[in-house]
Length: 170
Image (tube, rainbow, N blue to C red; front, side, top):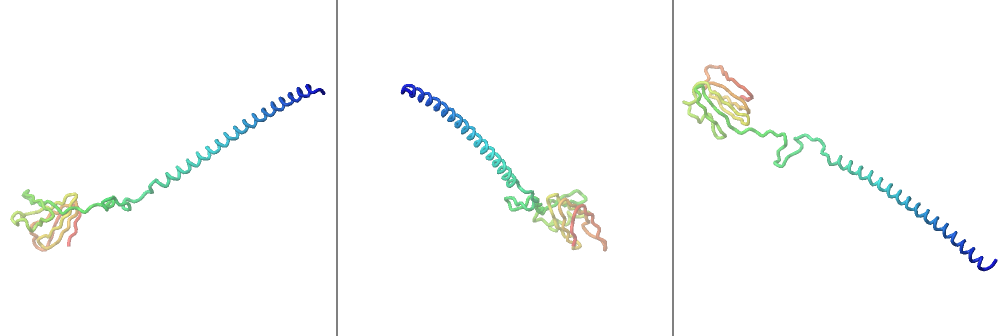
């Protein structure tokens, strides 16, 4: 075989091999790109699922458990459902319409006895309490929103009073 033919044949063979090699290289690159995108898609899916799981678990941990109000103190040291004790005040009136407001320091005994004739009415408002000693020595503690009607002097052995609301007698 002459040398020129051989070189021509080698050149063509070389071109054919190079063409095949480039084709194989392009296939490998496209396969590599597909493989890389598949990996990225799988990693993104796993990351998405993990993120959703973490957010769900975190939400359940931060949601407050239902508690009774008495278990959760507020900043004042009181509990949310505490009912504060009533202040000591009341209103005393007689059957003639004369009225006296009684506060913390006031006692029924300190009011002039001339003003307290007849049937008396001691009214304690909704946010109040009051205690009184009747003329026969009976101690009465009235609760909030209560009314006690009694005479200024009891006669005989009978003690009749009218109570609307709550009271403790001693």
